[in-house]
Image (tube, rainbow, N blue to C red; front, side):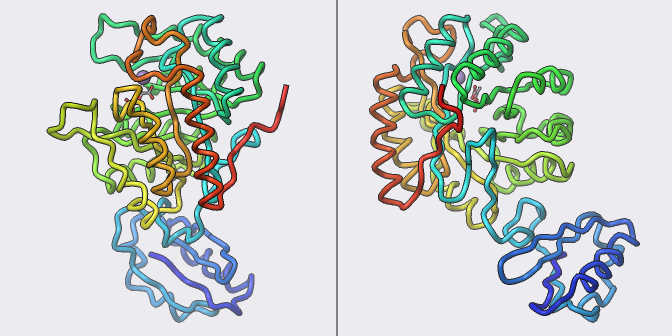
Length: 344
Ligand code: PEP
Ligand code: MN
């Protein structure tokens, strides 16, 4: 349920309303917009549905929300939200480029790529330490050693670091090193993981499941947001279709579709979506043109030797050329390019 306050509602009206909601065991989510204050009711609304809340002082109207997600919805939060990570903005009016290797393979490799992506215009560093591999015999990542290397590369470059957490048991460890927790496509509906990640206070980058609808994706975001600690950044990374010329099918229409439903920032990963390096830049540009708040791409200095996903990795020069084009597009769209605050 959403309760819209009148423009002349007082603080006392708001407090009274919140107390009324909390009295029956529900949570009140207050969103102060430029014009109006909106109060979202979170919890099992059956206990309050029959109450005439629109008769309370300061209340203009009370509306049922038909969609199953609430905190993720535009109704609850009519202004697009911006997530700030160590001074790097992700969301509304900004284009944020996240780049790095698929997997952390070693210190020299990571330090070189981190420096290269920073020079090429990345605002944040990505890299996997715990890898969700289809085969149990494939390289699974360096684990904690990889996290340490990511932290060191982040400290060296000033780029905040985004890395995947695959399991609830890894959450405290990954939190020690990461600035943003990535929940991968394969875990999008791991509700225990979403709940645990949502309690950390670290932003959660939530990738879309490869067979998940936009509604299911937003419901997963709702799991994180319902813990009231961590903001969410959505990441479209392609879905399964009959097409096998690309690794997945990049659903770019999901970007404006999500933006019509949700205030959450949405970025696009054209690397995993396409699976081919020559398709990455065109789809990254298309994503920004479609209104995405940023992109996340894989970069490797020697893709032929990469331990994971080499076929889709951009070399640093191709990455920098792509970011140059994104700059032009951002300008055309009246958006700023995100940049790290520290410059060492
Ligand atoms: C990744 O970004 O490292 C990754 C494994 O992506 P996804 O979960 O989208 O497959
Ligand atoms: Mn990868």
